[in-house]
Image (cartoon, rainbow, N blue to C red; front, side):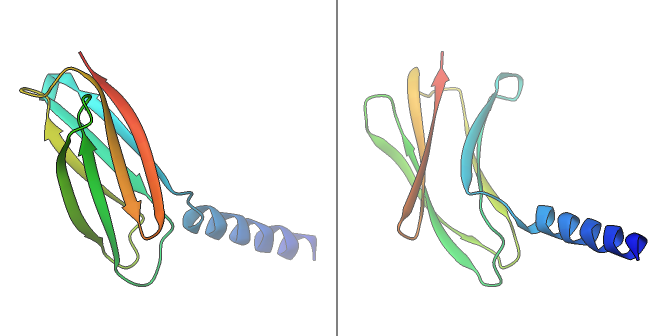
Length: 109
């Protein structure tokens, strides 16, 4: 009986960790590849989901708005830009998912 209980508990824990995902946004700068990669994580759903990625320069100017579709069953999506030619300073990357907005900042030196 105890063995069955522990196996059931492990299955519930593993399934919960596979499907439970908080919504978040993060960016990483890869200088050696001249790239800025920003990723949005969200809960997996069984339908396609529309989101907007918005890149905002340090002076507040929006330089790109990209409408993307996250396919059903997927838990993340990303966008990237090249570093070369970008304004120096603190950039904002914003994701709009329905009524929710998620932001992160990164520095280009």
